[in-house]
Image (tube, rainbow, N blue to C red; front, side, top):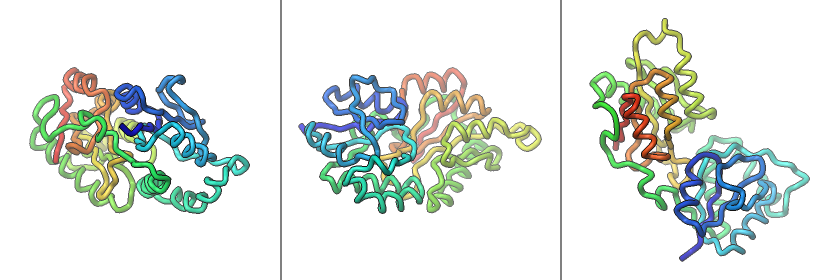
Amino acid sequence: MARLGIIAGGGGLPVALAAADPGAQCVGFEGIATDLPSDRLQMHRFERLGALFDALRGAGVTRVVMAGAMSRPAFDPAALDPVTTALLPRLTAAMQQGDDQLLRFVITLFEDQGFEVVGAADLLPDLTAAPGLLAGPEPGASARGDVAQARAILDALSPLDVGQGCVVAGGLCLGVETLQGTDALLRFVGNTPAALRGDRRGVLVKRPKAGQDLRVDMPAIGPDTIRAAVDAGLEGIAIAARATVLIDRPSLLSACAEHGLFLLAEP
């Protein structure tokens, strides 16, 4: 079978992928934190992509999966290898656009080098959920109305490549996920003055952007998301069925049950 290469960022997803495939070649980048143990990682620099591609091919890798949080790289011009130097104009242009455009470029970059890019959910189907109520109480009419409003907001923003999350309470938008991520969104919502929020609890909706390539940057939630949602005073979370990664699913569902938070997967 073709050997898998895991391009690893932070969080639990690269760890789960590495555990499921002990023979996978795991790659990390200098300056990017990852939870994988050092003995599973081969470290590289963003400035030396040619060395990365050669190392992957030398290890027999034909498929790659990109998993985990990864910040935009800062380049040291003095460290660029010839491959990266040739790619720099295209890469610079991609980095000046939204995350979706940058990730499309990265996918094309690996495909042009002869690697098949696969999604984490293709390798671990249990990462995502079928439609239905996954945990917690059945959401009422008000909560479902908030879910519908948040979806409408995300649909409207989708062409602008802004983010994958939105919080709505009582029909009012309390926040939209931007480059800072879901945790920052939920902290912002939790700090909303009571005079503005009243007794509205609200919901978080996480969904991919329209036309997003789900092989990379699929929306994800984990136990930390649940705790942050509770701290923000929310009553539930709605995700896209079969298009949202559930990190550490048993702990995630347990946290929902513990705090009475609903988790709904919608088509």
